Length: 77
Image 1 (cartoon, rainbow, N blue to C red):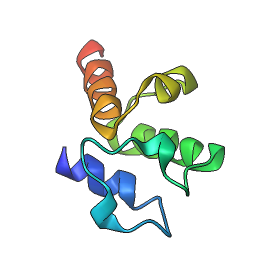
Image 2: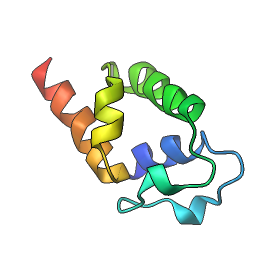
Image 3: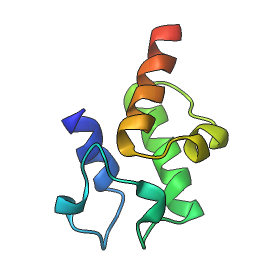
């Protein structure tokens, strides 16, 4: 989970690392945009080998929710 949070946070250039934890509601971050969402989807594909759909991004509320989605998708492979 910590590795996921670090990779997730690295996509945000202006948001302090300290603002990221499993309970962070990432949609509410000032820097979160549709471009960041696409970068997150790409990072997950490259780092974890699964494809997260845009619907998964909107369903996930926290970073932990998104992490659990990635875990579920990996388990289904």
